[in-house]
Length: 456
Ligand SMILES: Nc1nc2c(ncn2[C@@H]2O[C@H](COP(=O)(O)OP(=O)(O)O)[C@@H](O)[C@H]2O)c(=O)[nH]1
Ligand SMILES: [Mg+2]
Image (cartoon, rainbow, N blue to C red; front, side):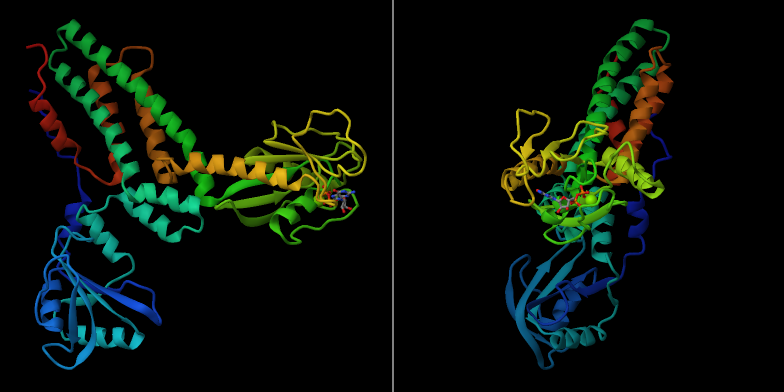
């Protein structure tokens, strides 16, 4: 058997556990007056807090109505529901006590002033409950990030994306990837002992390569989807472009429902990119109106505006291209637009033209609703794809990109020595572990090897 214990592996989970003797408390609901105020206590003294404040430890995980009193049987502070969640099956993995009190700041203050008489109890720092949950393995890093995104989400699409991360669906995918890398690594490690026997090595390589190739494809498609996730997290970029004076600024204003951009009948009015953020179909949209594109007649400042317009067009998630019957299109879009509009359709009857999807008029409002519906459908499609993304943050993207580089080093076209294959697989696995923060690769290796037998 090859030696599979690598002392290099390190888990920060256990390091931070060392100094977690303290018990923390905080108001978990919003401050101010409300129906209910929830106070959470987490740590070894949680049981003592209950005994001091309500006289006993109520049954685990059940709501118990209790008088909450000043420490050791003084006057009643409030009557409310009390919960006892013994660790490790609690939100933080530690013993947790929860007080559901009436939502008055005075009650909460009084409770906290009583807590000062209990030893080992400290006000929690920002994020400390979640940090303990991570340290105790209740949440992994992706789930913690999902929770942060969930709390910060402003749109339905953001909520759905964050929920998938928080519920561990994304982590399951990373874990499955890691297990397949592990499978390939186990084959490589086992064959390393038999380098003299060419057929054993060839057979191992023949089994490893398809796994590596498939993973590369999956990683790449996950990365392609991560752009969509970015659109959900940061807002989908919708760029309106076209020749000058066709009504682009008028369209931005109509979509934004306010006069965000200046509208004038003078060509070259919009010189810089104008942005408006709107909520559209449950998604955050960043609308950008750009300087009109024309080949002649633009001054220096307008030319700078046009260069900016072109860069916005390149970065757009959705490009809306606009023309009108009274303006000659001198410059076309650099890329096929997602929606092409012919504005000012009331000006003259439109003859057979097929270079636009919708004829609209911002003046008579003709055709605007069908256009809005089409835009909504596009936005929903993009956000649906984004919501199901696994690789979401830059941190995840970098790690997956690095894994692809490791795998590319295996599939160079020349057969790599098994030691190199194993090392690259190990690095790719480390990348997966770094995403979820679960670093226990080597234990699993040992387990796999015990079931693994090659050449015998
Ligand atoms: N007849 C007509 N004029 C329009 C329509 N939409 C916009 N305009 C006018 O066209 C001119 C240019 O509009 P603007 O939104 O500034 O165009 P931009 O240069 O592409 O941003 C303004 O005088 C608008 O009032 C429309 O549907 N019909
Ligand atoms: Mg304009």
